[in-house]
Image 1: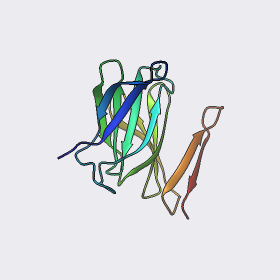
Image 2: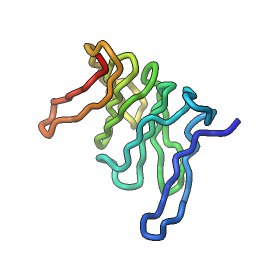
Image 3: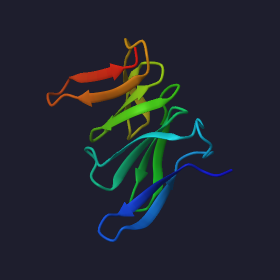
Image 4: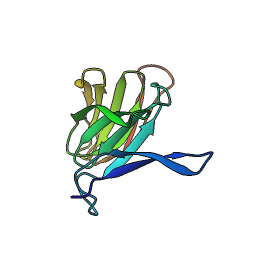
Length: 135
């Protein structure tokens, strides 16, 4: 089977410099399809975090293109935000989950959205999380 790929580009040269193999299938609407991606948020420019429709969130080292860790966060990842050690994941079932990327352990969960989480933002002040959903 083909794998779902995330391409890494050098913006100065316009050349592809690598790929991340993120899933098991490239079919349209595949549960392995990458739905969300963040680079560098709180972790430097050499880290990427991907989220798939199957609910798997993976942390990648961009320099080596190696998956550092991955964790299941729910039915499907729709949006992710990252800080230095935490990844906040919006899911298809309407939850937002915080995962410690050093251990892969769930830290917190916020329920209350009736539909899929479409977007989320972390407030500038610590302790504020805003989530928009498909209700």
